[in-house]
Image 1: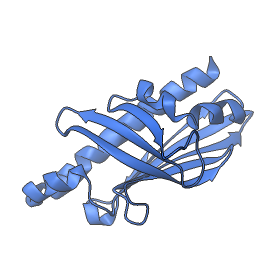
Image 2: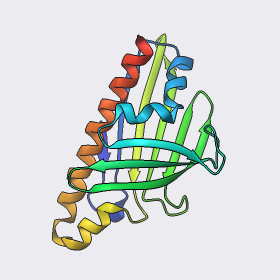
Image 3: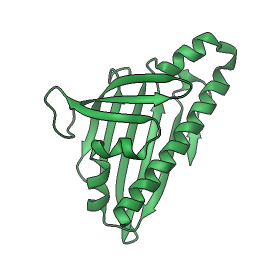
Length: 168
C-alpha cells in the first residue's frame, strides 16, 4: 500500500496490489464487470450503465449508488476515461475534466499469474468529503487521512474478493 498527500487540494492517491494465481484474462473478466463490484464493497450498493451503454468503453457512463454510516447515501455518475481491454480500466467520478475522484484497475501478467492493482485519486473536483471539510476546515488533514485509510481498507478487501473469485 502506498498513499500520498494530506490535504484535499493535494489530490491524494492510494494504491493497493495483489498477486493472483489465475491468468490475466480471468482476472480481467472480473475487474471489467462493474455489476460484480457492489458484492465486494461495504459502500457501493448498486451500479448501472446509463445513456445506452451496456459495457465498458471510453466515454461510457454508469451510475453508482453508495452508502456510508457517516456520510449518508448518495449516487454519482462516472465516466470511463481509460480502457485498454485486458489491461487498464479507469473511470472519473463526476465531470471527467474535474472529477471528485478517479479510480483505476490495472491487470498485468506476472510470474505465471496476474498482478492486480487498484488505484484511486481524490479530487480535484468537490465531493461529499468537501462538505465535511467546509464544516471543519481545521480538521481537513485528519478528515482526508481517515477517508484515505478507509479507501485503502475497502480496496484491499475488493482485491481479496477478486483474487478469491479468480482463483476459485
